[in-house]
Length: 72
Image 1 (cartoon, one colour):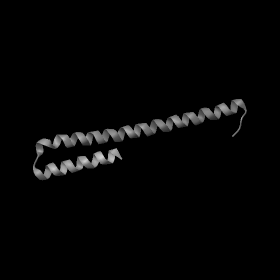
Image 2 (tube, rainbow, N blue to C red; image 1 turned 120 degrees about the vertical axis):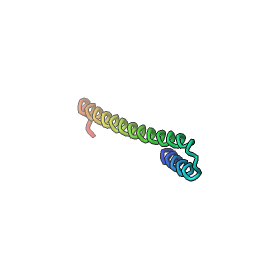
Image 3 (spheres, one colour; image 1 turned 90 degrees about the vertical axis):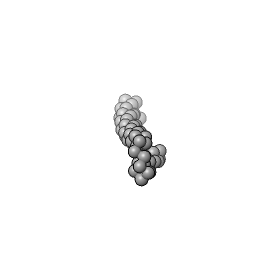
Image 4 (tube, one colour; image 1 turned 180 degrees about the vertical axis):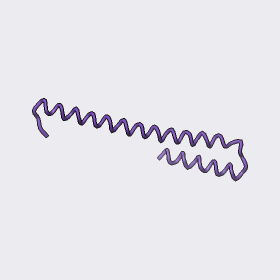
Protein backbone atom coordinates (compact mmCIF):
# COMPACT_ATOMS: atom_id res chain seq x y z
CA UNK A 1 0.00 0.00 0.00
CA UNK A 2 2.84 2.37 0.79
CA UNK A 3 4.35 1.82 -2.65
CA UNK A 4 1.09 2.76 -4.34
CA UNK A 5 0.70 5.87 -2.19
CA UNK A 6 4.26 7.03 -2.85
CA UNK A 7 3.89 6.44 -6.59
CA UNK A 8 0.63 8.40 -6.78
CA UNK A 9 2.12 11.23 -4.73
CA UNK A 10 5.10 11.45 -7.11
CA UNK A 11 2.84 11.54 -10.15
CA UNK A 12 0.69 14.27 -8.56
CA UNK A 13 3.80 16.31 -7.77
CA UNK A 14 5.04 16.06 -11.34
CA UNK A 15 1.61 17.07 -12.66
CA UNK A 16 1.40 20.01 -10.24
CA UNK A 17 4.87 21.25 -11.11
CA UNK A 18 4.17 20.91 -14.83
CA UNK A 19 1.00 23.01 -14.54
CA UNK A 20 2.45 25.67 -12.26
CA UNK A 21 5.74 25.96 -14.08
CA UNK A 22 7.72 25.00 -11.00
CA UNK A 23 10.52 23.25 -12.81
CA UNK A 24 12.96 23.92 -10.00
CA UNK A 25 11.04 21.50 -7.75
CA UNK A 26 10.78 18.64 -10.23
CA UNK A 27 13.84 16.94 -8.71
CA UNK A 28 11.86 16.24 -5.53
CA UNK A 29 9.26 14.36 -7.56
CA UNK A 30 12.00 12.41 -9.29
CA UNK A 31 13.47 11.41 -5.90
CA UNK A 32 10.06 10.18 -4.79
CA UNK A 33 9.73 8.09 -7.96
CA UNK A 34 13.18 6.61 -7.32
CA UNK A 35 12.15 5.84 -3.73
CA UNK A 36 8.99 4.09 -4.95
CA UNK A 37 11.02 2.04 -7.41
CA UNK A 38 13.45 1.02 -4.68
CA UNK A 39 10.56 0.03 -2.42
CA UNK A 40 9.15 -2.14 -5.21
CA UNK A 41 12.52 -3.81 -5.82
CA UNK A 42 12.96 -4.37 -2.08
CA UNK A 43 9.54 -6.01 -1.90
CA UNK A 44 10.46 -8.27 -4.80
CA UNK A 45 13.70 -9.34 -3.11
CA UNK A 46 11.84 -9.98 0.15
CA UNK A 47 9.23 -12.18 -1.54
CA UNK A 48 11.90 -14.06 -3.51
CA UNK A 49 14.05 -14.75 -0.44
CA UNK A 50 10.98 -15.73 1.58
CA UNK A 51 9.94 -18.27 -1.03
CA UNK A 52 13.46 -19.71 -1.17
CA UNK A 53 13.57 -20.00 2.63
CA UNK A 54 10.19 -21.73 2.68
CA UNK A 55 11.33 -24.13 -0.04
CA UNK A 56 14.47 -25.00 1.92
CA UNK A 57 12.46 -25.44 5.12
CA UNK A 58 10.00 -27.81 3.47
CA UNK A 59 12.82 -29.76 1.84
CA UNK A 60 14.68 -30.14 5.14
CA UNK A 61 11.48 -31.03 6.97
CA UNK A 62 10.83 -33.85 4.48
CA UNK A 63 14.36 -35.20 4.94
CA UNK A 64 13.97 -35.18 8.73
CA UNK A 65 10.73 -37.18 8.54
CA UNK A 66 12.36 -39.80 6.32
CA UNK A 67 15.26 -40.25 8.76
CA UNK A 68 13.07 -40.55 11.86
CA UNK A 69 10.57 -42.84 10.17
CA UNK A 70 7.61 -40.59 10.83
CA UNK A 71 5.33 -40.20 7.84
CA UNK A 72 2.89 -37.47 7.00
